[in-house]
Image (cartoon, rainbow, N blue to C red; front, side):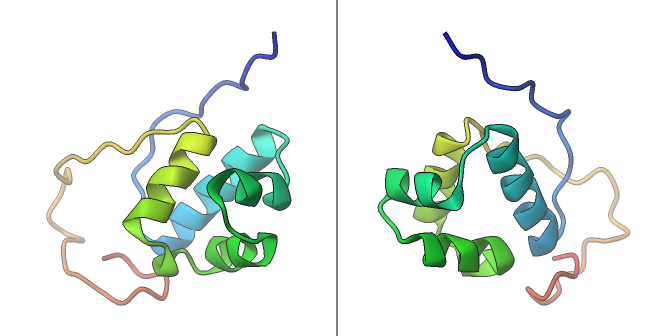
Length: 95
């Protein structure tokens, strides 16, 4: 029986680039290629590559499928501080 690598501790994701890095890191920790993950969720490897580079293009459905394949879950909670609560653009800045 193959065991999944341990999960990193929970971390807040405030930018799309942080989301991209977290998804890519987990995929690599599981020793999965883009092609393998893409096949499991019914998309091309090139589309998954695009989404890893620009995750703001992910639909909620695609995000949930990716999380499932990567054995991750989405937890929403209120921010701890209000200092960075101003919405911003999807270019990597905090929302």
